[in-house]
Amino acid sequence: PYSILRSTQFFEFFEKEIQKHLQRKIAIFPNLKYQPIETELVAKALVKICQEHPTNTISEIGGSEVLFLKDTIRKYKNQVGNTSLLVSIPNVLLGKLGHALITENRQINSTTWDAYLRMTNK
Image (cartoon, rainbow, N blue to C red; front, side, top):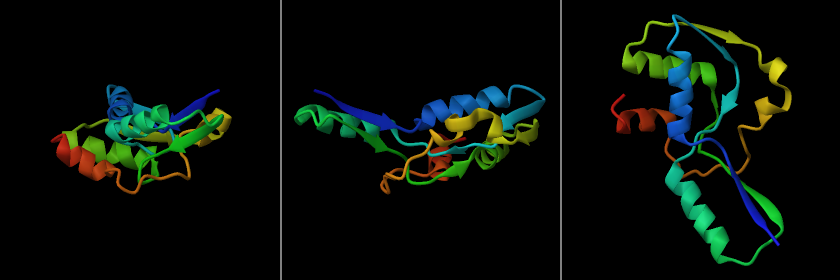
């Protein structure tokens, strides 16, 4: 018996990935779509699943908006005053990974990337 919760990436992890790209003078990154979500929403969903009987299914949960990585990096870069040159490459080299970072099950009560940046004073 099992119940599995698959979530998109947390805002904090997503931000750390962007910071890695911006450590170089030329930031090269795949043009992927991301759907960051608040850690607390995933934790609440996980607690709910754990309190119920196993369903033998995999549930998915994702943030309220699907974003292109290039747009989120550009916004973050502008917020923190980074001067890296941004170079986006097609995601065709990543195959299925390029589609594994989003889900149709959007949590409309999840914060947005812009709101996250404002909350963390970026």
